[in-house]
Length: 238
Ligand code: SAH
Image 1 (cartoon, helix red, strand yellow):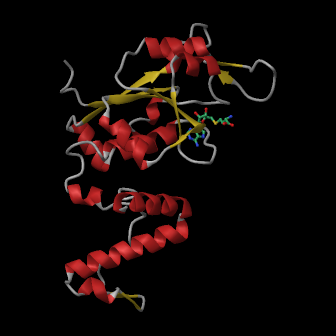
Image 2 (tube, helix red, strand yellow):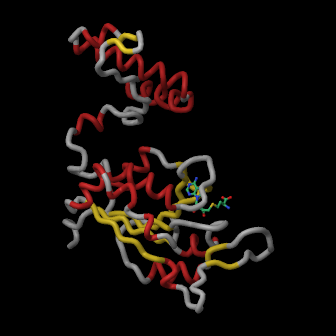
Image 3 (cartoon, helix red, strand yellow):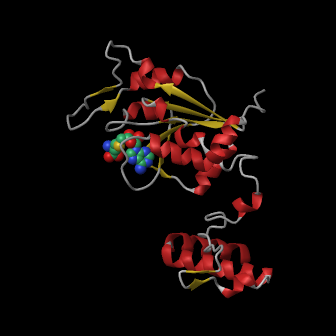
């Protein structure tokens, strides 16, 4: 069937010109040109039915701001068949993390609904069983920048997008830890030197030092990740 089709992102937005944006450059941009992934935009306004092409209306129950209409959004979704779960970017969603990024990268693609105004009608999300995803505990003015961040994280995991597989394997979160610190030339800069161990050529000791650093940084900065790491380690060792 479509097993050879590239991983596909379909963006439903009232600002299609925001895409591919930064995803058209660098690693993701090259991979897009080479057909290692595909990107389509669907202009939600194209599915409005009145002469003003309105996609939003005032909220039932009153209050500030406007809400995106379920009928217009549904027409946009139904009118643009594409693979993958329907993802709605929202601060109320499941916090985006590397685990979810890996899950989405392993599928056929995603359809991403980018909200604007106060958000979208709840019934639309329920009717489509939308997967609600948050970029973090902050409020953006629209779902587009959140979608760009999510897609960037997904695309770099797709086969053949990043050359060296190792550079993925050692990254933050891949082992449940934050990454160890990096150093490059010059060896002395601003009166600061590079940790001696890294100049030793002793690969085993360097690996151990880096692991210790990653553990220390994770324990200090992210007690939540650290607790999970310790629990997982106990399970695998016990
Ligand atoms: N009234 C909403 C915020 C609306 S912001 C609330 O209080 O939750 C406008 C749109 O930006 C939202 O519909 C959502 O699609 C998007 N958005 C804002 N912050 C986001 C975040 N942290 N992650 C993902 N999408 C976000």
